[in-house]
Image 1 (cartoon, rainbow, N blue to C red):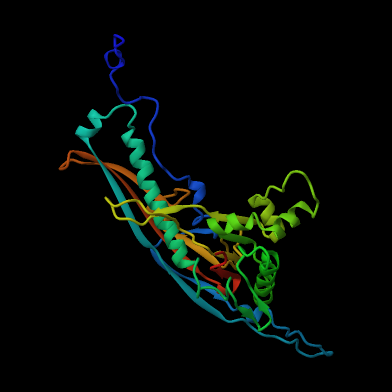
Image 2 (tube, rainbow, N blue to C red):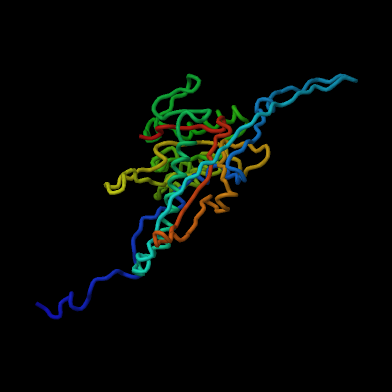
Length: 330
């Protein structure tokens, strides 16, 4: 045996410049990117809704000399929001902090850990509030369904028989006819985006039909141009549905679905939007993600607590401004 041995010249210890943690990128979450965020001072309140039909009716009439002009009015109703509060914490015992190696940045890890929990909670609520069937004014699935008895959709993963460009255009036209607004955002589940960017029809549209040695690279920006929307958003976030201690079971939060909608560029008076996110900013604070983070002592535990809290309501305010595709890929 060669001496000295490897074990005699080096004792294994933790590296000080490397550790591994699966922290999801904030770019994978779309809950705060689809609809405008409305900062609110109170946990619940009301807002006014102008009647859409009253604004789009042709009521102007001929006017004779010395006569009254035609006139009319518009109805006004109210909607409401009610923010819910969700919170999560991670405790850092003082003994553990004092004994931790440099490669285990516990304070930073705790903040990332709690933030990730808050983002997952908000993303899952987005699916419940916006990303499901039975919510929007136009509701189609990808298997076999007719609109007005004429158009049949097929799943976009069926490259031979489906036409996603035509499907989205028809959905956009349907929303436009109902509301006067064309959708400006397309939200895709991760698997839907994966199938769409390889769809022959989309590649042909983006490449202009040209035959080249290099295949067309389909990006979200080019896809948005092809579908004639301002933005394509992809729900890339994942969730572990297994309980603690069980084998991890990860799945995409968004599922095999798509939402085409009109979202106002910013909240404002008389600004139509398919939905809004009401954020209780006077309580949570002004974080861009609407997450309040605190660190404080838990002296009875001899630990520091890192706590995250969110207070929000994701609200559909104009269902006719959205078109939803369920089970749109296999």
